[in-house]
Image (cartoon, rainbow, N blue to C red; front, side):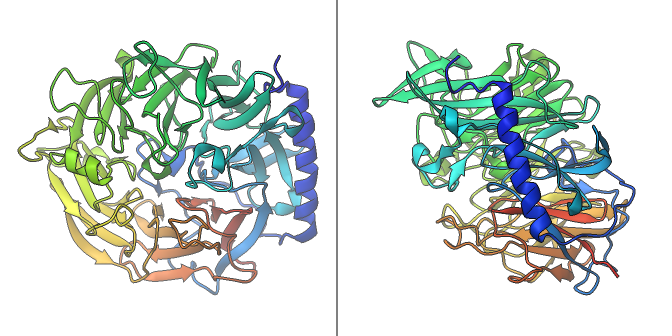
Length: 568
């Protein structure tokens, strides 16, 4: 066994050290929150469900009457060992061996750690913690310098939001590592299946998604998926997954017993492609199913600002590619700058697609589609003519309203989808929509870069501007989350992460700011302070808040910040 492949005892020893350090830090300085209450809902996937609409319609503890600066604020925080890009997940009433039942919030970091924290009482400390690195064995997160861009700083480990199968009690997560051994420097993506009660590996995990050696300016593909193709990075008519260049940014998707993992790139450093790779959830050792967006071209990354692939009730999967090669005529194999519907029943084949008529202009100007994710709307939101809708945005600041039953493909003479709405006129590549809308009770909520929270009314497959709030959000805009008690007490939660320390943000690090708006009239209910004990940790771009059981969980650069109703 080469040093990069850590055996389980080594992992456990490292996890134990990590856990002890975190417990000490928590006991040294955290504030105790309110006593736990009976949990109402689980948040087991990115943006709450596979439709990615951003709703939690079962939140009865937080409402517009009690979310205000007097009654609501920061309760406590948990220190973690790296930036938290992944959305925190939440499962109630988990039976932790030897520790009883807990409401648990799960947090993954760029330092390649996964934590299970008591969601209500920081005095309990971390319930378990697992690390996927072993510096003594030459296994570390990937330094951002290695990928040739500063899109993520300072290191790359776990970026995409995990997914939890509550029926089997399993958390699936992808970690990226750098592993130095005698034959060179390996860059490896692994899919792990962790028991949510202990952190132990399950289902023949981890699966090595891809292992690429980079030495003397050349790539050697040790293991990983490949498809027929002559595109960028191909060798003798075969296109291989490049584990250094591919970036596991989107959240994971679990549907009909398969875990789907999507990939984009780090910046535009080639060679890379858009990949979707599906693993049998109960047996990670089984060969995966594959989709490559540009097998005979290049780019076409699936990035979507962290939004996971969406799925409809039939199990069809929807992704948006950003830039890349597009074939304007059949036979078509390359789908850059496209909304794509994948049919899992036939090996992740393209069942339908939509590509804007001006795709070549978008590609030439770097005005990608796929700068945000797609949401699948409920059937009740559609019309007689277009009952099944899909909505997503792009760098131009345009929202596309698409009929999932007839996505209309590519039409050089002009688009034929139900509607295109300009949310904000983007005249640069970082001026449009780098986020995913939320949908609740016939209303769509979106925050573009340099813009305010806007509400649109959806009727007859058409969006009409309705209301807007007053706070301006810098780069990267924001992906809203909605909490409500059914059709009432709706709150729109939005994070300002512009002070995220990256060059395309403000360039400096400062606390994330949590905003809460009344979902009905967009009046501001609350905003967290920019400094002091009540502030969140320093911002991480594209972060999405998790609202569950009366609390709001925010991932930051150094901790999980927890907000809720203040003790009397």
